[in-house]
Image 1 (cartoon, rainbow, N blue to C red):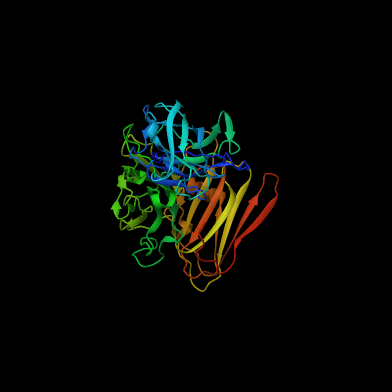
Image 2: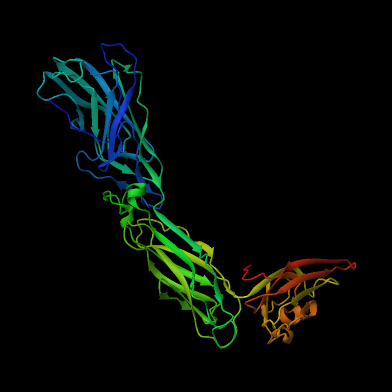
Amino acid sequence: MSMKKILMAAVAVSALTAGVASAASISSAKVSNKTVYTGSTATPYKIASETVFGTAGLATTTTSGHNVTVAKIDSGPVGVGNYTVAYTLSGPATFASVVVNGDLTTDVSASGTCSPSAVVSSGGGAGAQTVTYAVTVSGTCSTTILDPNQGPMLFTLNAPLKVSGLGDVTVTAAFAQGGTSIDNGAATARTLITNTTGFSVSAAADTTTTQWLLSGGTVAYDTLDSNLTIGSISVASVVSGTVGPFVSADGAAASAVDHSSQLLTYDASITGSVAKLSLAINGVSMSENTAKTISTLSGITTGAVGSTAATKAVTVASDSPTTSQGETSYSLTVTPVAGTSAYTAPAAITRALQSVTLEGTNFMAPWIAGSQSGSSSSQIRVSNNGATDAGAVTLMLKSPTRNTGTTAGATTCTSSTLSKLASISTGGELVISTDDLTTCFGAFKRGDVLVTIQAPETNLTAKARLTTTDGGISEISLGGLNVTNQTY
């Protein structure tokens, strides 16, 4: 009587009569009707690493033939005799239910004269990781492959599994006769189940400059250029076809489904001034706090189930200011939100988005001394070698340090605070001293100063001078002629 086909793991055995050394092997295996091993190709069943198992664990499918392991005696079919076949699981998985006699089948033809029968001799209980069968081969049995009366060579175990946690699940098999190993011992273990990330979460700054323009509005820097995208977000289930199927996380009675069918949304929060700007994600406006420093949007969907991560653009829009605007930096935090207790949402990520900068000539003056630097002092000199006056100058203080207890001042300075920043005359110069910087930014110890000149065509040069406490003087060039549209 022919026996059924299997689930899980492997097997090996050696021909009784041949006496030729060889090895048992796992010929093939399936988990939840997914082929995980073919004898040459291993594609283990994947459980998402975000899965929540619960105390009961997760079940594979229970349909006959969905969870099978085929063990092979590589030396060929065996003849009449008494044998044992043992299967062993390792890792966070056990048999989901009691393994019975009929769960082991062979490749013997039902129409032939060879008759194998199998009985569970040990193990095989629900929650067990091992099962041993006593196999009796009787009748007239050939040890020649494909003979109509061929003896058994392939042994198939059909047994659903219960998975209790993350980790690799492997299976092996061994054959023996009279307590002596057949076919040089146990088969090489094959991986049935492994883990992989179930969701992808990413965000990035846009690479095309977004700027307030020198011209085009009522005053300089009141109009944005045409590129309004400052970044992008991608949050989605990993495509099942790329990384393999996943076990459902719906409890002990769950059967296998693609993890990509699980619901995942996310919240986004962007820190950065929106005093004269507004932010949107994929065209949906973000809410702003009263201080106009934080923008938020909740419940963003991840796109089509099972598809690649749908990239959503983060964009800015002008609120039509009537005064010149300064440069603004933005930081994005993406927080995935699980739609069910079946899995844990991925960790939040924070990424810098592209800054909204100013069109014109930008010079960065590093390590500039402020009023709290003792007797050290700094000067920044910008000269206009062009034939026309240069437009207004904007200063921005970057990464300042201050004495303990000092109240932070402004970080952007225009001619409304320091009148000499209104313009640079033809053939003239602009000299910015430590005292000027104190007027602009208040007390600080040191910092970097970004100097932006409203000049679409530049004939500017810039230097920074540091005078130290001992009277030493050092100078650095910040840039030469025709240095345009630099962003720092």
